Amino acid sequence: MDVEPHGTLYSWTVVGHATLPGFESPYAVVLVELTAPVGVRLLGSYDGELADLKIGQPLTARPVQVTDEVHLLSWSHPETSKNPDDTDGAVATDDHDTEVGEYQ
Image (cartoon, rainbow, N blue to C red; front, side, top):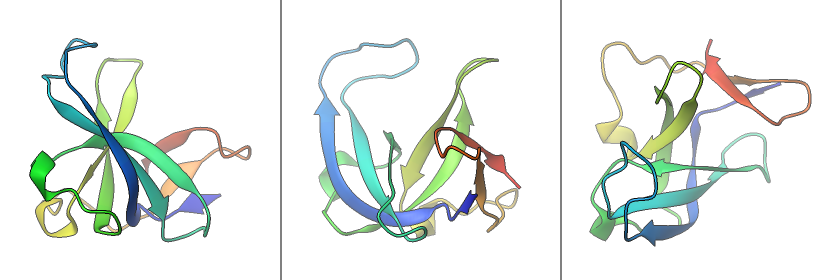
């Protein structure tokens, strides 16, 4: 199943102290409701100013490689997430909808 890397902010929490290497505090973990398929929500880090977070705002995801084995989603405002290497392709998931893969 393919899912679009776009959605709206459903909720978030701010982590106030460092819990993982590579994540400088404070940082936000966001819960984003996807545009398609309807009713699916994904967690990820937020790449932006914490003061800019507002329920319902549009966000776009991109995969970020943390280690050789770990990839996470990073969500940002659509206008700040564009770069020349980005595509508007879908994010691939396995048949059980449990893992998010690379852009196709």
